[in-house]
Length: 352
Image 1: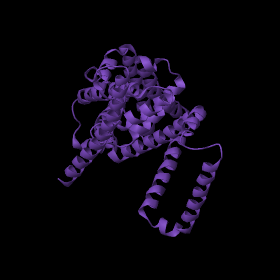
Image 2: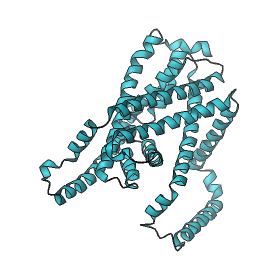
Image 3: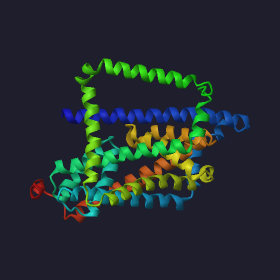
Image 4: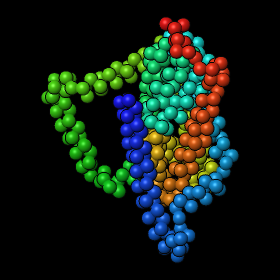
């Protein structure tokens, strides 16, 4: 009962946070949209941001949006192959269809409660492939470690490719020319390092330090696991394809929506990097946080707030409803059907 209450509370908090951020983003853009309509002499009753989003979605190119579903499928086929490579390292040979469907089922679960998907995904794979659940959980951890590394690399690439644009945008608020900011940042960094060194012994006894070290150990172990694979090169190629397809999903949404159709592939990378961090932040599917960061990134390229809000909703609902919900619900039906019904509780015994 306590666990149910805790999970329910988490769901309410995360959902409330996501809806709250989404509402704030909507209210800000709606005020700006109303002001713009006033300047153009358009009556308030004919100037609804919600109606604009609905109209923009209705007039989007659905051919490109269907291609998003194809890219989603290809990314998760590669993710399934990559996952199976880790499981084969442990002496098991799961079917690709089970890997694919349990991955999608995990995405579906994440819409209800962030991070629940990893538990659901591992439990379903263990059950249907008769693998000890603790082994499956270990491979999911490695899988997520590689994802974190990939996201960091993509974010670094995005900053490098658009460094001048980002610097100029930040330059509106920070004076880079005098170097004062860099000196202050350097002073803060040196002070912080000195404090860390002085307080190193108390910090080593703290729970935060242990969590950081456990995380660092997990990253190292994840990389060592990949290095021990029979074909680490294939693992890396599938990892690249997973994230390339994620990026392609955003670019295809660009092509589907008029105001973003003319933006460059690099602009799509920036929006992809910003938006992905919005999904990483705990809220159901990135609700609200994705909208804010994707819209902010589009603003770097001169896309108005209301058009950015429309794009964020088109991409969000295409990916979350068109991909995660529909395919996730389909996996609930297909998994028992393809595996002759739910596996019994003793299904793990053959893997012990």
